Image: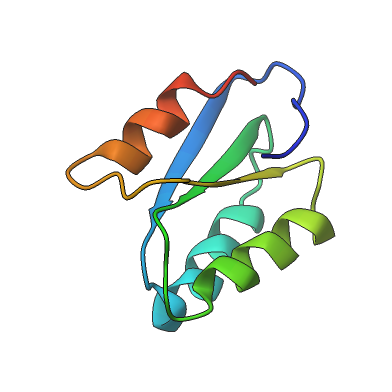
Length: 89
């Protein structure tokens, strides 16, 4: 789990499970917005397609904007989303 990030207007929670074909476009689109008072919380639900590694790399590239959480157990229906909601920014 990443370090805490400062308080912001809102947080964007991105549950990730094997989203390699889509995750770069998703993150780049969010990061290119003109409104910047947000933080992205990516919660990986034990991906098997290397999208977790990609998300972790993006969180290191943009530490002030992106927090990365890797679930320890499969979250199933909403588990990753709920973990992101509870993450303290």
